[in-house]
Amino acid sequence: MQNAGIAALGLNWRYLAFEVHPDNLRAALDGARLMNFVGINLTVPHKLLAVGMVDALDESARNWGAVNTVRFEGRDDRGAWRRLPELAEAPREVRSQGFNTDADAISRALCEDLGFNLAGMKVLVLGVGGAGRTAALKLAAEGVSELFLVNRTASKAEAVADEIRQRWPAVKLNVGYPSGQVDLLLNATSLGLKGTDPLPFDERQFALGQARAVYDMIYRPAETPLLVAARAAGCRAANGLGMLLYQGAKALELWSGQTAPVGIMRRALEKNVYG
Image (cartoon, rainbow, N blue to C red; front, side, top):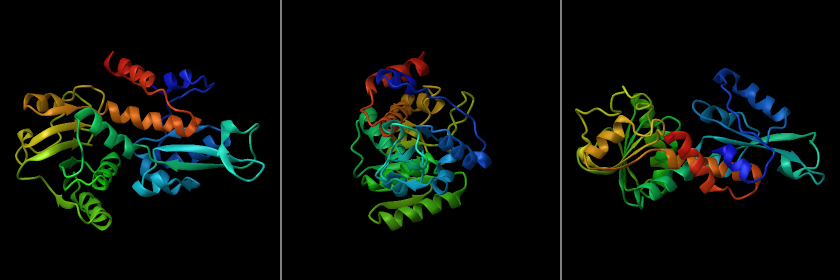
């Protein structure tokens, strides 16, 4: 996806994947900065750790408390911070600025893939670590009426619920499963990455017939056991492909200063995921 977008914009860049142990994240960030990387993306478990490691935080990262995109910037002759590709030569002083492109991607994908207006909805969120926490915060900011938060460690769900109560007091918060109907079930757990995984909720406490729609953040496999079961139960359903696309497109725009070729990136992503 990213390399297709980079090629379409005519940039002499390459997007590569690196596995970095959390204990080495700070060293990896420093190394990328010293080698004048244009930018990087971070995934679990680095998004929360990076908040305290980058030199500056964009409003998006401050607002959602997580960093999934880093842009390296250098000072120009006037002392202003600029994207590295905009500078004529490698600057002496380079900083890392953290952004969050996940939150807007979540709401855009839900609206486009499921046709939802999030305001006033009742939503069950499964998993509140990393992307799940960001999703819950973004849903609250979009004006959902009620949130149900379920997490393997209940104390984490309570902590996210308390944060939402302080920031968006109009949203009704519940830690645990709903007894009645919800408009949306959003899976932010890793259950579903394997075809043999169980469903990501306790079937003794919740049935898919209680949800109008199901969104699984997992995009590979394209059809998780949850999505198969959701469609069988008559729910509208979508996977996390749209979220991945939109967060990546925004990251490319932050690095390049150009409009991302979303259509080209989508086709490359679909070919990679669906074959």
